[in-house]
Image (cartoon, rainbow, N blue to C red; front, side, top):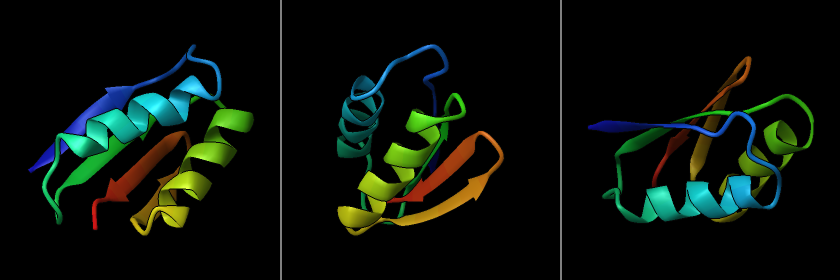
Length: 68
């Protein structure tokens, strides 16, 4: 299963807060696709997800997070 979250127009640090809340609803092994604005959101969300131990892949403005 995977989930999608569009956070375009959302400012940091709320981008990570909302991403983290969405991850809490997923089971380990499930994927969350997050659409982010360029700049700080696209830098901070992948970094924070990796720091929390998740697997992260980036494709343009889409960040794919595999929950661990």
